[in-house]
Image (cartoon, rainbow, N blue to C red):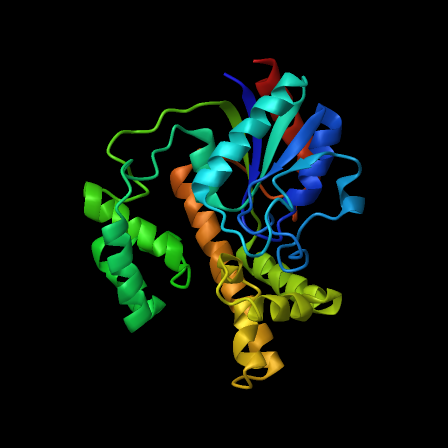
Length: 303
């Protein structure tokens, strides 16, 4: 089995800096496991690694989609595996970095995301329901049928909600718990990054304030003018739409970004704790433990 190092966890815990440091030490290349960093022009709100921060380390699956294009778990699964193969063939270590749990799980396992035969009729039924009743009512329907999937999907992500409903209707199983247990495809070592909850929330709030000084509002306005696109679903963008429409103040919109980002971080932690076997580290409050972490990774690489 090919070896794959994975660095996962919520936003603002140091995944990017750790990945760069380990890539330099371990002769690695990085694969982004983030569902929004694939989009060009969305740099600030997605906390996309800059060219300077990359320090010459090659990154994959960043800036590979236009704002008008869709991007699915299946796309990431296919392209991520191709990247792992290419990096491994060069004699380098693939390092997957991100916080989108379903994407990472689908990459590492022979994960069947749903029924193989697509059902246009079911999808159209739920599309029509959403158009009439709205995203919240559609999500409520998923909550009634598959509360496990609903807990991991934001109510405004209509595409994922409909996909989860479709899978449940066709198979009787949650999209998160397929009938057959998926097989592990790689010898992976999963580093989970976390920190004290109060510290995490403070870092998230500070990050949003910094993003505002860097031009987050301009990126949000760009997406506001493209509201039919999948790319508008990202946290940190759609919260500004009421501001652009004169329904909220800028301060209220910023507070909403912070609140949704904190809630998402909590969901990210819950996902990785419940679904993936991770080795957990707090490099925010105990940065010196990185030496112990590096030794554990080296032991895994030598095994």
